[in-house]
Length: 207
Image 1 (cartoon, helix red, strand yellow):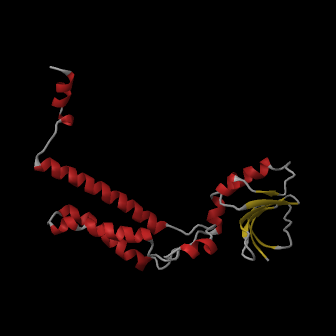
Image 2 (cartoon, rainbow, N blue to C red; image 1 turned 135 degrees about the vertical axis):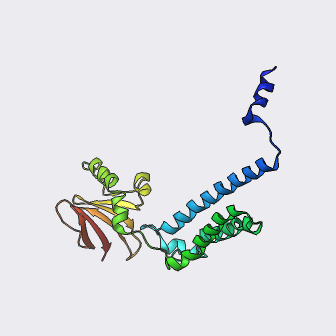
């Protein structure tokens, strides 16, 4: 007996054409697909508009407003959940999980009237350690304005340094500029409205 024939005799490698096994595989694939769609629906329920979202640029090219709960993802899930209900028409109980997904998709706009925005505190806390590390690395720097990938990857347009005050600019467009600043002395530039978050950290907007 050759090794190839021996491997083919193993149960795992046997080719099964029975209706029972084919149906079992279909059910596994169906449950797997519904599980992925359920995870996407969970992300849709918990999604928040990023604090640094650029409304001015993105809304110009968006067919569906970012605040609307009827997103492209929701439309996709609606279509897929309808397909997920098809087994019920064949009197297969496994289709109940597809029905539950469909219900979850349908009620979302009634539960969440408008997509919430990420708070400044949430945005800050998720980046605080990295921001502080950058400050420590720049203590002896003579640069007054820093724009690089590290800053951009954290969600900031630029970092300005004025009299030992570190200004992380989220948006600097016209009068809508805002962001965070670090000032150990508590000295705030005159052109900024600032509100303390914690310690030497402040959130600010342009005057």
